[in-house]
Image (cartoon, rainbow, N blue to C red):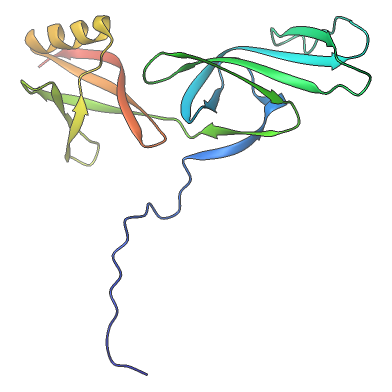
Length: 181
């Protein structure tokens, strides 16, 4: 055996996955799904029953579900048609997946931070719960939210921003005014 010590530098995130599998037929409106590699919020979900005879099917009275049918042959399969909005850039995406297949669902988290400063280059300085600062986030692109943050900060208010994180991306998604400084 050697007396040498081996040091390994890792750039990994301890093996934590950015997504988890979920059966397509169980994903509902207002849930999350990955479409074309982007984390999205489902705005509309249709279950298409592709069967020989056309018929209407009503599913689960507690969910609003549109059901369409189509003639494809006697061995058709149920498919889920998802219409979703990318949670970071608000682009509309669609996907059709067999209802028995697994889809990737992003781990989405929301964290509150107190706003400390806004730099001239559009980055914000945030105070974490542990007392450290987080300086790697830009101001949001949503004009209304951007105006609320800038106006509240200029007025000297104590502001708390909510940061949404998913699949390695982060963005300020909401604002709370906790009063004057």
